[in-house]
Length: 180
Image (tube, rainbow, N blue to C red; front, side, top):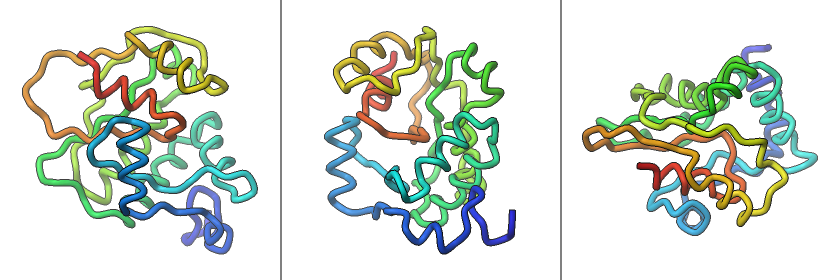
């Protein structure tokens, strides 16, 4: 990679990325889709913009550094979180993590952490049930499939920032926030 490339994408190619701002519309989307009070998004996945290919490479191409560089890029464009916050990546089931060799949400969180100097804790949430990919599922199907998939061991109070690589319907974020 050249020094000015991000995840294998040169600056002129990134100019076409539809980037979200930290505005009211973004917050409404987060509240509606994921049930989160405060929400942040990096960019939209759009065919023809290159974003879909970058995320696909980060997720399935065995390139955790791609996800880390995306995390650093997003963190440079957002205000750091409140002090004493913990970044909590959406967990993969151990079988999927073993197959991929890494958790792309955790690699993304590592990138955020490098810029913000915030702790990443991959042990706060666990994925206890292995299911097939939900990529082609509707929102209702995802919600149903994720019903009892996540578990949160009893711990003290945390200021948690849930980190995921992709928001499609918000079902995963919602289920993670409701994990007990």
